Length: 201
Image 1 (cartoon, one colour):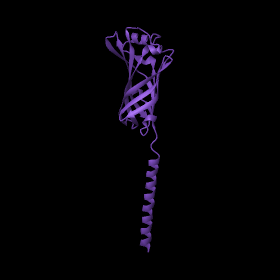
Image 2 (cartoon, rainbow, N blue to C red):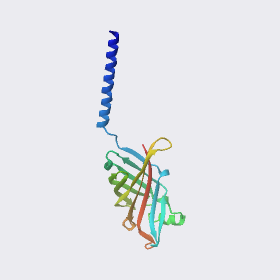
Image 3 (cartoon, rainbow, N blue to C red):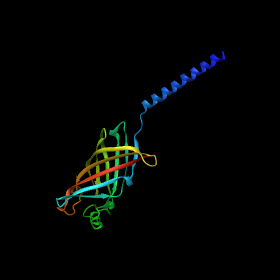
Image 4 (cartoon, one colour):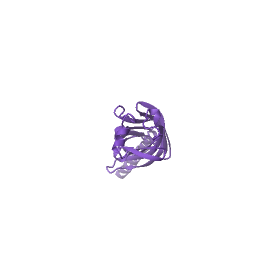
């Protein structure tokens, strides 16, 4: 009699465990993972600009300070969001005299407009490729641009936190933002290259 009771108890426990496991799986299926929020890691990200010099060579410089957030929804990538802010005064063209000119009113007028901002309005993702339409704000003017690129990887940093990487480019006409210094010497089109590593919150 005792052995029958023990057997029945074990069968009940197995049945209860099976029901619990099924409930967990059903809940997971009905409640997909939420969008993950990431913070841009400035120390492992690059913000590069490219312009034509004297209609001859491509000149490259960088901004050393950038920040922002990425909300990435892997299940619904179109609902992802990107915000990037770059400090205009952090420009680095490998020449301090030229840097002082770039942050002057002839170009970025950094004292009056300290930040260059990008905020997404629409996101398309196909595989690892992405196309992010957004508003670029510089010198108090906002214009739409499209950032095209790809997700470059996912993993964990040295501290064990989840990270994601991406790189993309967009181009704008500087005169549309009131950046009019050295006409003819500096090209009208400016290309921005952003290579970002971001840490999951």
